[in-house]
Image 1 (cartoon, rainbow, N blue to C red):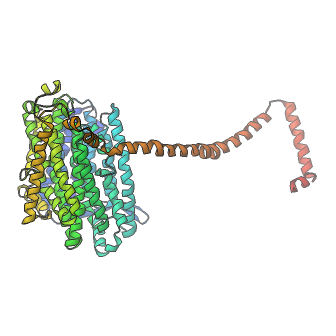
Image 2 (image 1 turned 180 degrees about the vertical axis):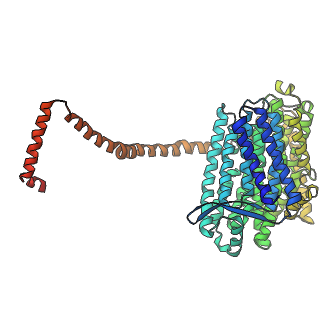
Length: 636
């Protein structure tokens, strides 16, 4: 069996599952779960077989024409290289365990068939992005991911919160995707192709063709999909969807698609564009870390944590690529440093953030859908396995030296930041401290101390279908930073990319991680207290808490813009449409024809005498015209 066949099977397996669910299993929950889980297992199994048996590590590209519109050729194809191979493993591995978790978590949901069908559609869409060999194909699957995200966020269709969140996610992403599409058109206009392999070759031989505007337009898609400022507002609201969706879409895969896209198209970004991208990531990482302190909802805290870590990835790509451009062999070094730092953190983040979201789902499931951390407390006695695995996730994201995966992947980003942009390095270092502090806040309040509510008192450990994925992901969250512990092929992919600090740099990174993680976690216990019933910062320093809770008023600003500007403009355009288009142009001409019709109807009275008079009037008019009596009037 050749690579093309295996890749086709990987891509089409979830689409087949979704089709079968739609036709036969929408009302058969067990069958829907079985089909979706089987598709996820197929993806993971074929991916691992591909790595260790079929693929020799060299780039593999195959393409076929789909349709032709004049000179424009649209193709579908696969591009398998180190980058897509690693992303394929992340999507397949994390996706399978989230599917298994969903079997237990969604057990009582009456719409399980629709849920698992949506999961399979999402997996199909995400795999299309991972494997696409050209920008047009990637954009098609990019939009399919947006559609499936809209459908899954709004799974609880009877709640207004889910309905509003799904619409917000869809609309905000379309704003970014508009610029993304213009960027793709600009790329085609400049190079005459959208093939990733062809574009890399052309960009290498004609670097002056790559412009800053082109890169920033493409980056607009990343702003939306990876929720970077100022298009970050949809991600926290998307927590209205089921918790497995938060883990799969908003932690491990979909939001990481933007970072993956940057790595896929690194050769289309100039130094000026990379500088802007770096600062967007730095600002997003810092602001989201601050906002996390103003949240009480366990999933919202993790949502802002995701925003912050995505900012780390984007900053790592930008500054790593700049470091490669300035200190290496051009784009070759940019590939080594920029993609290495960001993709390594993407991989470790997929493990520990999926674990944290699934752990929060286990807590919510056990606490009868309670999500306020101040209504929890004392869960370590009631849910020991969930507590231990969640603690592993906290240790991983905090970057505790040698036992937290982010210790290694964040260090790679901090290293390139230190070598490229020292102010950004200081901000990201401070953000690392804030990360440990707000995650420690979540853990000591929700899991330690005594129960603060009846739901916490009656909590119990979740079933094995929920706990087993937590255990597996906990192991990965601790071991994920050690490239030597990966299977040989995947270890090579990670290890060869990541720039390793040596000597004093290595010691500095070690000290920074140790201080940030240990101090942050320690301060959380001292400031907030184990199992606290109230937020002590809110009680003792209300302005500080209000500052974090405000989220810098982005939502209020957008809502005001929509209400005061966009809606008013829409009303004005609607008025013009009613007056001129529907009124004068459509109804106006219809009104003239109607008047003629009314006059004509008046002539048909049904009276013979009236018809005789009209007949004689017509004869007189005809005679006057024939005799020339009307010539003077007509000439005038």
